[in-house]
Amino acid sequence: MRAVVANLSVPRYLLTAAHQRLGGMLSLRDDWPEPALPQAPGWVRLRPELAGICGSDVGVARAKSSLVLSAFYAARHQILGHEIVAVTEAGERVVVDPIVSCFHRGFPPCRSCRDGFPYVCERFDQPGVTGCHAPSLGFDATLGGGWGEVLVAHESQLHPVGDLPSRRAVLAEPASIALHAALHWPRRGDRAVVIGPGTIGRLVIAALRRLHPGLDITAVGPGPTEADRTLPPGPGVVETLAELHGGRVIRPRLTKVPLLEQGVDVVFDCVGLASTIDLGLHLLRPSGMLVLVGGAGKQPVDWSLVWNRQLTVQGSVNFGPEPALDGRHTMAQVVEWLHDPAYPVDDLVTHTFGLPEWRTALATAAAGPRAGAVKVTLRPDPRLPLIH
Image (cartoon, rainbow, N blue to C red; front, side, top):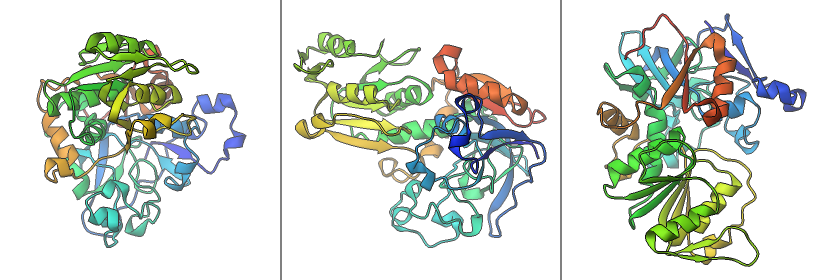
């Protein structure tokens, strides 16, 4: 089959900066073997109709992923792509929950899986019957990924979407991540800030609108959003919100970013840079919550405000059964929202490329707003029609 394959056996030090920019870990293969079905009940073959490019995919392609996370993604070859709308051999269109848990590997449930948190399965590095050395599809070539013509998944990972347009359906996975992040905050107040209104940021805003009608939402960063206002990043956010909401601005003698006394109740940081984490900490009221959404890395941040103002810092990635939804799966809820035309996601998919154009697709996704890109997708098999 044809697939874009990452070869992680290539040492990083052998990749020049130019190679990394061009996706030096990846190559297009026309002869890659189709993934075999695991020798266990319930596994099916899928043909991806459309697959998204995530920030973690760009990190792998450019050898920029966290070195710590190499423990989680230990496979020597990867077929990336975990944001997938696909067609089964029976002709059913589905979106895919990529998480591979104890259940899929054929193990008794670990503590996390038993407690209802399969997305942080403690046997992420043990392949079991799957042969998969990764916590999810799209990070090990054994089961395939969305950037190939065929992958395999367990029927429990599939959520039917019917005739949902392809460009909405492919957003099910990132929208589930956004909903999972939004559910971490039990509403305590009326003001929220979302930093980084890219794909995940805009989907966090959309989830907050559904969960908390009347919540005042400020987006920080470039691009259109469904927030009440959008502000440019930087210390000026503190002054602007103080003027809007009547808070006080307190200026430390030795740092540039002022504090917003009587600050906001929650900040969702969808960027994860030192500057955005620092801004979020300065915007929060005492006992507020900072939710770090998606992936980041090693960042030098002064965490003094966390203990001084008794802030909660909550990491958030992946999704699954949600206690706040009475055990309903995040993706099941998101699929329902995607079928609602009022759910504002129609303009998020800005680019679609074929597999032979994978380098251009990666460069476009990495450039983001500079290329007019929000969500960039790959179309692995042009013989599969897209639904409009």
